[in-house]
Length: 100
Image (cartoon, rainbow, N blue to C red; front, side, top):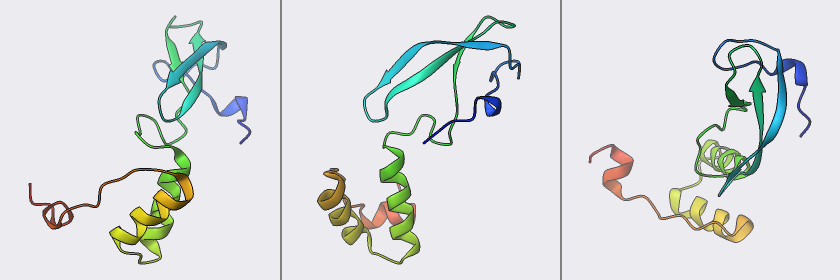
């Protein structure tokens, strides 16, 4: 995936006056490029739509695709385990109905 540098803006001040300054390591998403804004003097990362997600973008998009294809939650869990070696619990009936 290639990133267009002109799409990136500071989250705090919306400035485009920044430079790359190291990486941020996450457990599931790996290394993420950090940027330093020269105007507000703060660090930020590019929000690609998966900010603060616990799973990788591949796992999330594959799950959404399977949901739209009307796969049951148990079949979705088996597919993710088989193809991405991802452990996930099968949701209980109360979780599916929103009763907690």
